[in-house]
Length: 439
Ligand code: FES
Ligand SMILES: [Fe+2]
Image (cartoon, rainbow, N blue to C red; front, side, top):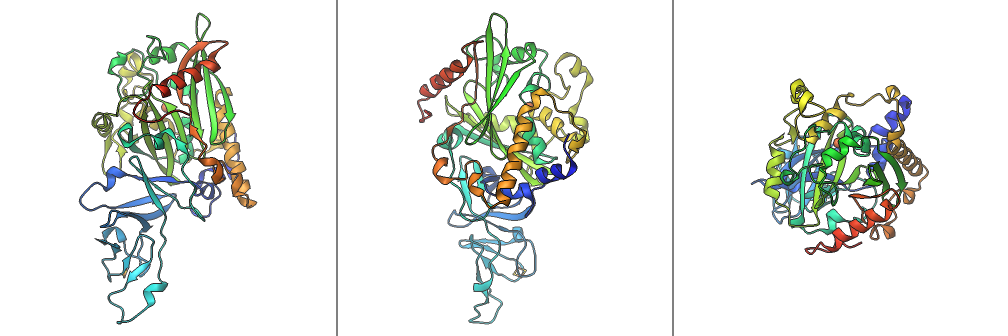
């Protein structure tokens, strides 16, 4: 159980809030590159409770500025896109991507007033299909050498989806390895050969056992959590018959991301970034150690389940997430179809937009959630005592040395599982011939 004050402290992310200050020390996904692919690359972005406009100017450079014009407040999303920035449609003030007003065509000839007008502007960087923004103080941090950033564009596919709940609920489902045996249980196994682009549809490690069967048969994982320089490593052991042990290694990347295996070929790095305190987007980068990703298949699979332009799921609270009691009897644990994103969406949205954690009862399998909340609390306290360097990955000299992180499913024995997950991960990385995946 958590007190209401702490719950507010950890969930609120607007400007000046405690957790919001921590999140602002990191690059956060602001949009998919796909969203700027149209004829007029200007879109509204709401991020951490701030209303912004993202644009690509005539020279192809990105800008992210406050959505309200600093003259008299109109919406710059309707502005005129020019080579050097965005021009307000009300009185023609022109803002460059640094937020500097560079022209005021209606003011008297020779006026220098524009030199004193600067609107909020944030640094943006594009990486393998996601545009990241830095809303924090001082200089933005460097990017760690995670696989999703090291791999070439051909081997990374990015997508996103809107969830109507607080970001922490979304993050906490990502560090809850026990739910995969229940929420995502399929009562029948499909042919793993049909599992391209889907979570939990491959074979388990080097066996012929479908992951769906393994998760069903061994549903009491033994979970341990290790603190790391990027956040936490979660190790979930499922002890099987014949002295075998399935080991699943997943990660929390501080503060809002996770990294998990998807199949033997791909891993997923996923951010849970607040739109505001009652909505969040998941942004995923699927990274392949094998062949280049078939992005058309991956995109089509996901567009079937989402509507544009806001990437809101087509199954949602208003249509009971597609719940079908017959399907729940014979095919899936939830009765909500075969897309695991819908299961997770129901799990994070149905406790309410901001879950009142005074009503929860955490068990042994919630160990990572408990530890994560402590890490976030410690980060908040460190910022309050002016010790930003103590935040994970905030000491610039360390960041470049952070690789991976290992996200993998393997089967070993009760005694050798620890060596086994490292050996099998190394083998996968050494076999990666299109890019340097070695650690
Ligand atoms: S309100 Fe934007 S230029 Fe006047
Ligand atoms: Fe899940």
